[in-house]
Amino acid sequence: MQDLFAFLESQSDYVVNLQRRLTAIPAVGPKNGGPGEEAKAEFTREHLRGLGLTDIRDFPAPDPSVPCGFRPNIAALIPGRDTARTFWVISHLDIVPPGDLALWNSDPYELVQNDDLLIGRGVEDNQQGLVSSLLLARYLLEKKTVPPMNYGLLFVSDEETGSVFGLDYVLREHPEVFGKNDLFLIPDFGQPDSGMVEVAEKSMFWLQVTVNGRQCHASTPEKGVNTLVAAADLILRVRGLYREFADADPLFDPPVSTFEPTKKEANVGNINTLPGRDVFYVDMRVLPHYSLDTVLGRIQDLGREVEREHGVSIAYATVQREQAAPPTPPDA
Image (cartoon, rainbow, N blue to C red; front, side):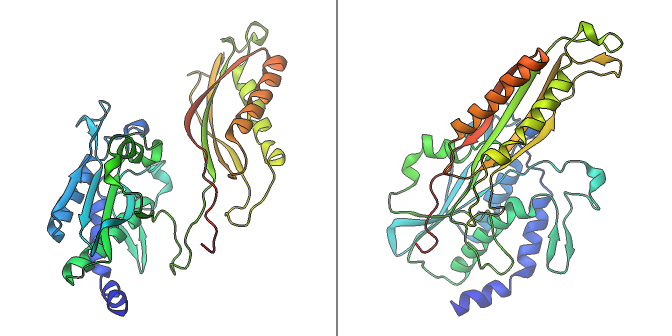
C-alpha cells in the first residue's frame, strides 16, 4: 500500500491536467439544455486507450434529443487474479449547468487552481470520481500490478436527470456486464482526508406542480383566477412538510428530510396580466424510512386545500423519483 500511496502523492500534475481537459467539455444533458456527454466520452475513451487499456466496451443508449443520437456509457476492465469477480468504480460523465454566469468569479469551463483547490463546473460532481478511477488504473498499468480481482471502470450518462440513459440503461439492457459477487464503489461523496465512506442515501423526489386558473387583465382581477397567488400559497404549505416528516437520523447530513421549492417557470410576459398558469418544482430528499407515496399524498392533500380556497386546479408530474434502499450498517 505504501507504494500506491507514494504513487498517488506524485500525481498532482496528472490530476490537474486531466481535470483541466475535462472541465473544458460542457457535458450538460439535453434536459438541461446541453448537447449531451459524447464529447467527454470520446475524450475518456482516448484517455483509456492512452493508459493502455484494451478491454473497452460501449453501451450507447439511443436518444434522439442529442446531436449524436445516443447517450454514451463506457465500461473498461483490467483483469485481476480472480477473473470471476470485478471491483467496479462508477462515475458519471454529465454535469449540471453553471447557472447564472454573473455569480461566477471565473469561466466555469476553465479550470482555476488555488493551491490544492480546483474550481470549475464539474470538478467535484463528478470529475473527482472519474479522475480517481483513472488514477488507480494508471497505477495498476504503469506498475504492472495485477489486482486481486478485475478492476472495472464504468462511466455513465444522465446521472443528473434520472439515469434513464445511463446506469439504469446499462442494468436493464446489459445485465451481463455485472456478476452477482461483484463489488461496487461510487465515489460521489467524500471529504478532503478521505476519512468517510457513504453507506446510505436519502430518497430523492423531484416533483413538477402545475397550477391552472384563468388569465385576465390585472386591473380586473375579479374576472380571473390568479395562479401565482395560489402557487405561492402551496409553496409555503409544502415547507410545512418539515414539521410533518420531522424525524432526524445522524447518519445523514443534514440529518432531516428536506422539502425545497426550487425552479419556477415563466408565466406571463408582461406586468399587467394576471397569470392563468404557473409551474414550479420541488426538490425533496427524504429519510429512507418514509414512503415517497406518503409524501406525495400529503402534498396532494395540501393541493386540494389550495384548490378549494383559490378556485384553481393543480396537476402533478414526477420528474425524478428514487425510493432509497435501507442504509448499509456503518460497521459492516
